[in-house]
Image 1: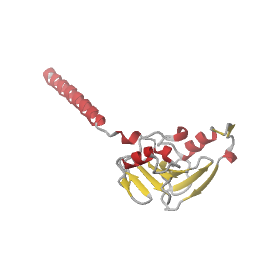
Image 2: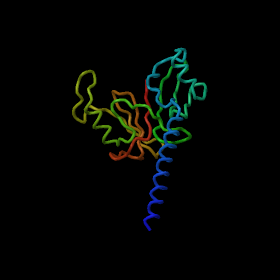
Image 3: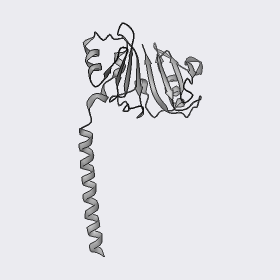
Image 4: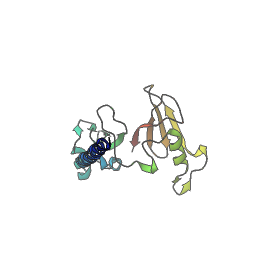
Length: 179
């Protein structure tokens, strides 16, 4: 009986070490595209070499939209080819990989609406602490009847939540940054 246990321990140890090694190999092959901070593109022209280079890397080219599905990003341009909006997909949705870059203002992809508003209230805008609920101005709506969209002022971004109504426990679905 003890020989049987020894063989099982050896098999378990071998399988664990093999699975650990194979997981490292998979992570090493992950492309670096997801670590790019696409939010820095806001207000930049496609004539800007860094913007053009960034959006030509793994992005599909359309007249006023660049879809970077591997990076989890969609970029909207105006008629002058200036970046006006950056949409970050935080979930694996519509063929987009989840965005892996850092979110601004200490936000995390798993934050709830309540956590986002708590974090925003604690920030300073123009060196003035934002205390009290009346300091955060936002407009909420549910245009698709599946997600609740909240545009926060003065931060110039909209957070799309995983709920059709205002729900403090709703998590972030995506973030849309405006220039």
